Amino acid sequence: MKETPYLLSRDELVKNFRKLPTLGNFENRYLKQVLSRSKLRMYEPGEQIIEEGQTDRWLYIVISGEVRVSKGGEELTRLSHAGDIFGEMNVIDGHPRSASIYAVTNSTCLAIDASFLDSLAEEDRQPVHAVLYRLFSEILAERLRETDAELARCRKELEKFKKA
Image (tube, rainbow, N blue to C red):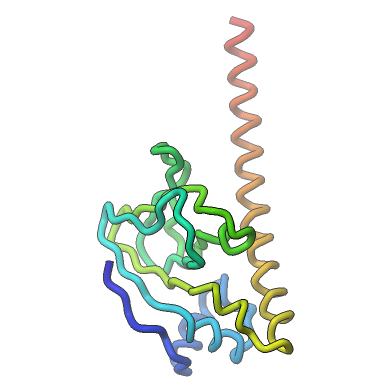
């Protein structure tokens, strides 16, 4: 992995990262705070980004490339759209990582040190948390819909198998 130093608030960065759907709802001053606790990390194909069971406070946003999500060695999904997020569950509940993430192609991610949430000024805490947790809710709702659809397909196949 190669990484940049922390991205101290530079106006051109705010403008560029605002284009990502995941960061577009942050006010400029809050986006500057997020970026000041973020790094760009570049991964080569096959390189591990997150290890299942690991504990840390990093949240990732795909900038370019493709990453694979695996649990217990089984691939669950791939993320390849600019703005796709992973690592959010650990930020929400503080539990160890539930899956491993690997770069499939040369991949660049915005790595956000989410521990900054604990050090926000009182007047900034609620607005930043509101935007971030709304974003997390949307992501998790979409993933739950996908899981529900997959579960329904599996049950249907199982019923066919039982009847045969």
